[in-house]
Structure formats: structure tokens, C-alpha cells
Image (cartoon, rainbow, N blue to C red; front, side, top):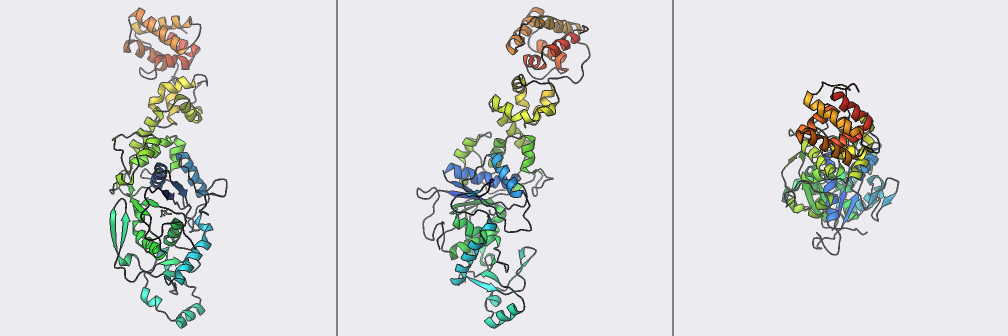
Length: 487
Ligand code: GLU
């Protein structure tokens, strides 16, 4: 039997020339992704991309009772939305990409059985006839020695009594402590009891999480296991398993937990909305990737707004700190606004288009790009376009009359604009400035009264854009009305 992993004794492989870095994201399909688990995916993906390695998606679906129908598809959709493509793993259209599959644990039972058998033959696993090995999914305390010392007769009697044995790992007798080498935390020492004789296969033959994960990581040649700090306590047993299989453990990196804004665990109530909620609000996916990266490490440049290419070029395990970090929704929105601001206009127009109808305003396709350009610095999410487009169109037709001086300006602008042969942004701006110069209005004294006349608000998008977006009829009507004329 061969494994793809690194045999014991072979030197570490970080950034080697001979073996590519291979990372994985291993969600259980028990729900959709949220910011906490998406961050693990982001870091693994960035590391693989930085080092020209492979990013593997593995579905850890060994617990049928917790699997949620549709969750696997939702996870894939979320990863695609974030732009985290996987080189190996299950595919949406069915089947798998990659040579180390299958990549769904429920399809790997035979492999777990084979490896378990090998451990048993090597004396590193034994059948456990205890009546209860797990309660509510958690292992029950176990008397390793008494169990391992059961005689054949006792075992046969228990089996005759209906006990189906589980398979238990036989921990190293000489181990007095177990050291986990962690890229974020350094060498973490665990007492030998953190290992113990743990269950590999339950009596129904299903693998435990700790066993399946090691078999898979070895089979899939994973070189770097980057995951949440909550898994650190599972790692000593995994290290023992690597040893028993004659394999070197991968580089482990247990990244700090993301806490809710007010401390405590992330929860839906405490700001950790599912990714799907961010997607349907039109938060920029690059901002989510940027935000989640910076929850763990920072650029040496000290910059915050980093496009994907910069993140890919600069990510490093060495820059990940060990302290807990806090989710900051305002920072996520701020980053989203910066990424939206930086989009080419045509891409931005395409991105906001699904939210345009919700504005309920008569903006034509022809002027949409100009309308979007005029408010682009006010968008923290694509959905914000609806409220922003409404700024071009006054709620009520009539508003308080302008003071005489400003009314004269509005009237003058209306007269000059009415003569324009074509309703184009540049020409509109020129006419407005020319009339302003004639009547002694410039800067704010020119634009604020006219904006008020057109939209009811002194501040807002550039005036020529408002004129263009409203269109000739509406704009002239509003200006004349503000001038006190009966339009
Ligand atoms: N399936 C585990 C989880 O969803 C991940 C296991 C691992 O990364 O080792 O938390």
C-alpha cells in the first residue's frame, strides 16, 4: 500500500522544488459557509496560489445525521463566488477533478477499512469490545489497558452477547508527551493522555473524524494543514497516527478564532451572517477575500486595500499571529466600498444591474453607466445602487420655491438648456457653467441651488449627470418649477 504523503525521515517540504505545496479545505456539509470557515478556505487557497501548489476541496460527510441536503452545493457556490477555485475535489456537475479522489469521505469507506486493517496487522490497532465507545458523538472515558488485555474468551462472550467491536488505535507506550509543531504557535506540548487509545472505526465500520482526516491528508499528499484553532486539541492523536503509518506530519497551522464584534463566539446573531447573505447584498467578493485575509495577517506595506494578486503575492504563514481576532462588519463594508470604487465602470454597471429594478426609477439603459459613475463612491455593496439611483429622482414633484436670486438662475439655465440640440453630459455642463458665469454664480453657489431644484437636495451626484439621467423633459420641468414658472 502506498501513500502520497511524505515518508517519515524525509526532510520537510515547505516550498520544495520536488514536491508542490498542497493545501485543502475540508468542510462538513452541515450548513452553508460563514465568515469563520470561509477564512480557512481563503488562507488555504492563497497559500496554494502563492506557491504554485494545489488547493483541494474535500467534503467531510461521514456523519449522515448532521449532513444537510444541498449544503455541499451551497459550499461550492460560495467558494466560486469568492473566486476560490479548487484544483482537485468534487465538481458541481458530478464526478471529481484530480487523481487522489474520491474527495468525499462518504465514498472512501473502503480506503479507511484498508488502512485500519494495516494498522491492526502491524499491532497498532485492536478490536475494542467495550459496550459504549461514544455518547452523543463524544468518546466516553476508556480503560485502555483493561480493554486491550481482554482474553479471546471474554471477547467471544461479548460478541455472543451482541457487542460488535470497534477498532481502537494502540498508542505508543513510550510516549510521555506529544509535540505538535505548529507554524503559528510553535512547538505545542501535549501530555501523553491527549493521545490514548482512541477509536479509529466505530462498530458500524464508520471512521472517526480524526482517523479519516489523517488517511485523507496522507492520501491526498497534503503538505500544509491550515485550519481553525479549535482543531489543535485533535492534533496530538493525528500526529500519533502519522507516526504509526510511517509518515511525516504535514506543516500544521492553527489559526486564531474569529470572535463576534462584542467578543464571544461568532453566531448569526452576532454578525456572522452566512456568505450567501453577503452575496445577495452585493458585497464585493474581493473585499470579502481581502477582509478575511487581513483578519489573520497583514501586509508588510501596512496597506489595507489589497487586490487578490497582492494577497496572493504576500500571504505568508510567518505573518499569521496567534491572538484571537474580532469580526468588524464596518471594516468589511469599508473594504467593499474601496473594491467597488476601483472597478472599471463597465464591470461595475454589469455588477449592479440586478439591483437596478429595485430602485423603481425611470433610469434608461443608455444613461445607466453615467448614473452609476455619478454615485460609485457611495456604494458599499451593489444593492446600494437602488437607494443611490433614487437620489437622481425627486420623491415629490414640487418643493419650496427657491429664493429669487436662485430662481432666476434656475430659469436662466432652463432657457439655455432648452436650446441645446443634443442632451449630452459635456454640453450640459458647459451650458450650466456659462449661464452661471453670466449671472455671477460659480462653485457651490452655482451647483447647490440647481441641484436643489432638480433633486430637492443641495448635495448629490455631479450636476451634468443629474441633468443627463433625469432627461430633458423632467430636468426642464423641475428647473422651470424652481424658477417659479408654471411648467
Ligand atoms: N471537517 C472539519 C471541519 O469542518 C475540518 C477538519 C480539518 O480541517 O482537519 O471543521
